[in-house]
Image (cartoon, rainbow, N blue to C red; front, side, top):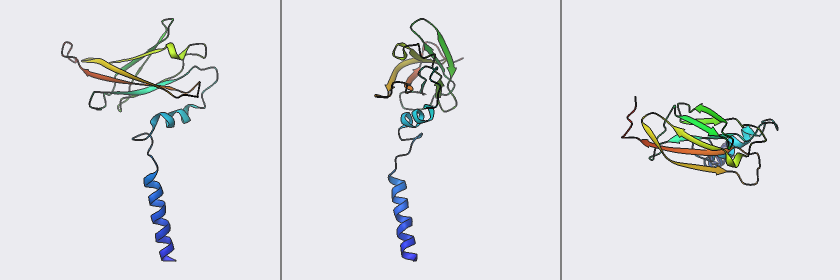
Length: 140
């Protein structure tokens, strides 16, 4: 009995160790998509992502702006982990034409990485921003 319990415990630990972690090391995109599947059909495609520096260090409290082709904007602030979420504009807004940009005093935008889950038309769009210190505009 004791041997079978030890074998079972070892097997369970092996399964747990081989399962990919989500949110902090696995596929955060798929985890977030699963949590956003409940949004209303009247809402448009939501957006999310992280703001970091070129070494992967989190940049908290950055401003993130999503702008539609017609000029409507929605601004949010990243949390203390550099993460942001923006709800969809409406189902009438073409999500492919929405521009997401990030900014913070004392930094400049270096790059953006946009990921779209293929085969899921209303899946959230991930846009991660990389900021670098701006030597021309020091932080306040």
